[in-house]
Length: 204
Image (cartoon, rainbow, N blue to C red; front, side, top):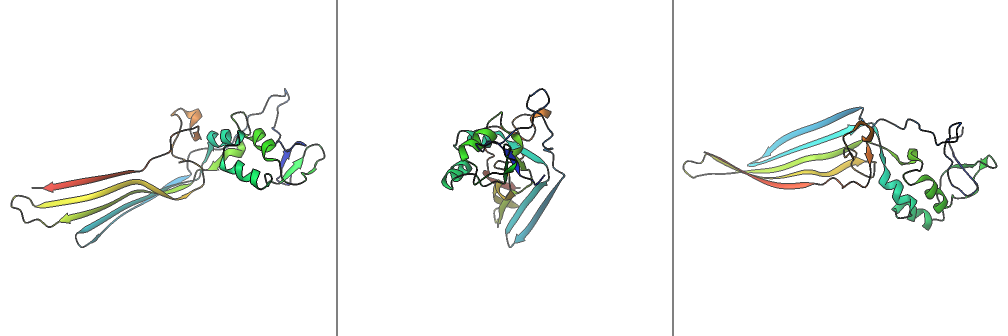
């Protein structure tokens, strides 16, 4: 009722269970964004032309199985930080005494209980909101004095250069599969990549 998580005497988080004793399955979130928004703009400075596209997705929930697995084996940054500070600083209630857990939760007990494929998935849900620089191009219109060529444009183009805002530990647009049951779930997937390219346009 007070918003704390329930743990046992060792500091391991408890799972909700059905009457049969099996772990329960509950709704965790929808990976689809509430809305998307973008801004595309082009401006010229002399013979230079700059174009950029900023877009974002707002709302939705995604889950990182990678983070859960790394936490379980103690190989993640957050589990290392918890060990360094002497435990996990989360508001918790001891299920045996029904009172607040005394002190920090032991990192090993907490992450081996919450992490992993069979852990507590709710703990690894993240806000899918992300705003990125989708594309940036810098072009130069070369002054031409060659007969038969009316224009020469040279440009550099970059895509997916960086995020202005992102809470999830991965690109929320990346999905492990196209099936409905695996949308918004990341499992040791390759990180999204940026790309850099060049373009030359000649007009005759």
